[in-house]
Image 1 (cartoon, rainbow, N blue to C red):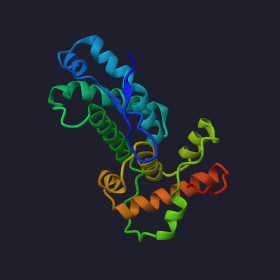
Image 2 (image 1 turned 90 degrees about the vertical axis):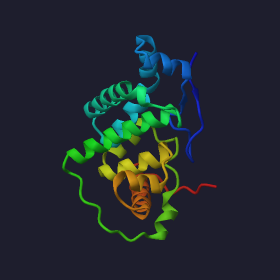
Image 3 (image 1 turned 60 degrees about the vertical axis):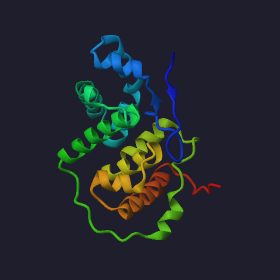
Length: 198
């Protein structure tokens, strides 16, 4: 039976939002191979996609996929179920991505940046579905790493600006500015006219 997706986020459900039956988690905790394989199959695409969009490198994304799921399986006995399993797994994947971004040494320190309210007018949604996936992937890859991470975490994974700020060690204003500028830059890269969203 395919997993049931749970609605999450402002704009659309997270690809991670898969309801995992408690019985499957119990079997995986006991080390049952088939249960672990099922969890891997359900979450391999969301983890890989998140890592690829945040890191812009297929090899690094594959490493994040492997490392994330290895950590999850190793620490599964400690998962108490107080929050959805998918949220916990997603957080492990995000942390793995951020760890790699930090280790690249290309990350510039956060600067105190004034929030510009007029940038919110450009925030909008990610470009319309008319932009094909390949063009979008190419355009995302041209954005700075932090900007790409903020865009993906906010628009696709449904993180709030406060949550993104905590993950990246910045402020909510910085997250909002990165989102607005990144969305505007993404639209320019895709040569899209500003759309108004009702």
